[in-house]
Image (spheres, rainbow, N blue to C red):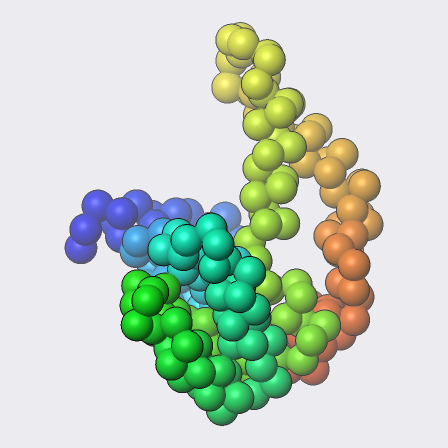
Length: 202
């Protein structure tokens, strides 16, 4: 097991030891070893790659002048209504851009197995799991809190500051029942339907 896989296995074990009983969908952004660690600790979890992460990776290989038309071609893939439609869109993308930008096509092909679970869900759920940006935004807010604080007297002082920061973010995003994300309630109801007996109802 590589070092990163061992690290993520420890993180997931710690989460279980702290009382996490289930993860329904895990949106990952390409961190080595993380998907396998999640599958090992929570075998019923659906692993979903961050769609924005795939798009950004593919766009690294595209010249500036072609970005708009290539982005439009990729949009046909991730907005496809079904898996079959997405497969056709990927073939068309390869046909149109594969000769000039083979690496961009390969990014999608490499991520395909962890991208396709996304296509099983209705639009209200797709919007929530489209990207890890919600988590990244929380990390950004917490970094802002600690950036100008300098040295902390103790670990407890740092922990208290982070706790208060998370509490404030939660209160501004709809409290403990949700993130405040647009359409979250509809997505939550969809999760209850799609994953019976796995979403707490009380």
